[in-house]
Amino acid sequence: MEAKFVNCEQVQEGLMDWLAGTLPSTEHQTLEAHLRQCPGCQQELTAVRALWTSLGQLPTPEPSEELRPRFYTMLAEFQATEQRRQRWSLATLLARLRAWWQPAYALRLAYSLALLLVGLAVGHGLKQSPALPAPVAALPPTATGQQAQVLELLANPSAVQRLRAVSYAEEVAPTNERVVAALLSTLNQDPNVNVRLASLEVLTGLSQDPVVRQGLVRSLQRQDSPLVQSALADVMVQLQERRSVRPLRQLLRQENLNQQVKDKIEQSIESLSTDRAPQPSTSSTDHEIHPATTADRPIAVAA
Image (cartoon, rainbow, N blue to C red; front, top):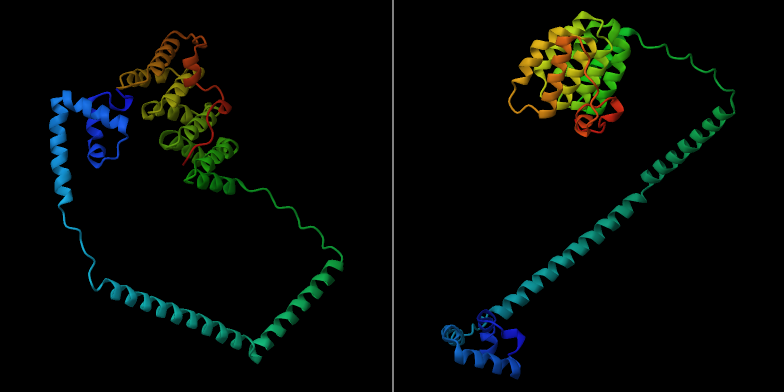
């Protein structure tokens, strides 16, 4: 038996070709041999043959007598439309050319060329004149100007611009309460994790300010990012801020808290309760959750 008809499914697929007489002789004989011994394929052949006969009795549609006249009418209309469009385009082009060569346009062209020559002559004369003294260097921006720039950039929809604002705030914040308040708000509310981590880094450098320390403690309960939660726990241990023990314990009761963050918080609570700094972790998971420096964190983020 030929490989093409090795089962009933393949035989039934070839029934239409068998009825049409398009099968090679070898395949034709193989299919007939299968049909003689397979009742299921015989029933399928009966159904296919009935369909074949019905299709053969369908009337062949005759084209309408109006088909040819309608076609030539449409063709004539299309040709007439194209000819009108081409004549209109050519007439428009000729009209524009005639308008261009009118005396008014020639005078305008000559006037434009004269102005161009005068401009070239004046520019050449200025180039030959002695150089003007250099302008006085701009004065450095005032503290008020720096504050306004930082606050404006912190409200920018671009995360890259907000990161720039945090770096500028590091110079302005030590003497500016409004910038400190803006950094605390950024730490608690900014939608970008990198911006929040950068704000935490700047605020940690200002931890001698009681307002900043209290703001960092309050921020523990407002964070939902495992990276920020872990970094804040490290900062609390670094500052030995025992007031953070209670909010850290409340943070442990959060549902779906990251297991690595949970371990970090438990270590921080133990350290703050016993006045003993935790040992640095060497596991690969901790390294992923606790970025040590700004360079370890991803920088390119969407707003």
